[in-house]
Image (cartoon, rainbow, N blue to C red; front, side):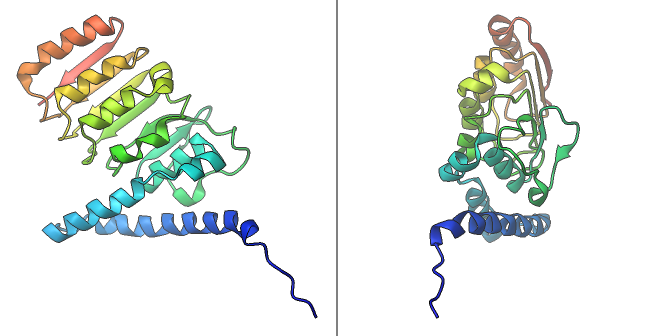
Length: 221
């Protein structure tokens, strides 16, 4: 009897989906451990693990499209997304909707308490429909993240609202870069210890000049 040959290439997509699903389940369990007291060693471990979560899979972006790949990255890192035309936020990595790749377009991103890093921001490069981004208590968000985000041409066109709250590594240097988001209509900045109070007036003037129609709310303390 001749054995049927299995094409390894045909198994690759199924294997990848299984690996990503398993990865999501493991991540959800690890998130609970992050709440335990930190030691020096544990900080190094979580820094390494979060870098793994943020590593960009360019093959995945090519295979499933930017919105699906970015959704997987964001949820893997603890963020949530909302798709255009939907009210429900996607929170569970393993319950992301399936269907035509062009159907689900990210309209809003809430990265509260997530571990997104600048090294993962290439996932955002192809997003064309994002209108709102919330960065709240994002310990790995730094000035270079905002600078990178503000350079993305598609976000420069689509982004209307942004909230940056309790991100301790952000300074006025990163905030000023957001002036490149030329269609931004609303910007909330609150509890940002890296932005000194004496820089507040300068920020107001810079945004007033660059984005005169912007509604800017500042509460830096």
